[in-house]
Length: 325
Image (cartoon, rainbow, N blue to C red; front, side, top):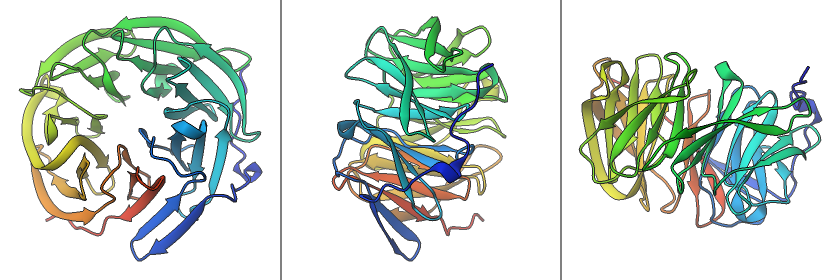
């Protein structure tokens, strides 16, 4: 039987080289070594940590949302995206074209597997006990499971021509969603591991990791430069509303606690805070100042928004104080 590791968080030791500061509703965590190659942020409710893969330092930094304590694992490879499952952190190494499993308690690598081409993002599919890895260069998603020795093992490959860019899991509907390079959004059935549909969203291109309102069935997707569409996944991806702001490549996040959507561009000095109605309509509540360069964004289960500061090798925690009408 496979044993879940890393759940005894009392074993974690803080990384003394990182630093943090708090200024009102804003907190900054400067990562050890600095650097700008930050491309993925993800929150693990099981570990109660924000996962920050730092490519040039070959590690994943785990940040406690309240204390801002930082623990680093890995440190020997080039890591770009990470997620947690069974108490292990799985991360992709784009340069080495592999998926690695790391134990949080011992802060060590316990197994790895090669991918058939450079991987982009990894996400854990809890209902299937699987890790799905996107490979946009060859247009595939590779599906891995953990073996008895906690090493990831390839179990299937899904052909996804023209992508995928980003990946989001919908456990409620047994679906995964991903952007495609030609301005469409792909719907994949988790059990059959099969592409069900490709939704046209009238965009020249798409970008970012789709943000899911799982309870109500809305998917926020990136369209071109700093434009977001709200799709109704219950209605074959019908567009319910859109929002556009100045800036570069579009990034999105969704907060299920207050039903707020966040949209920013990279580069871009502001993140828009938007209310999402039961009809899928977006309304602007206000904007928050953010570091101009940053290619990742996520939320934790406290309602905090986290954004990357690519220029300074840091992540910023923002408290959303806006109230929906």
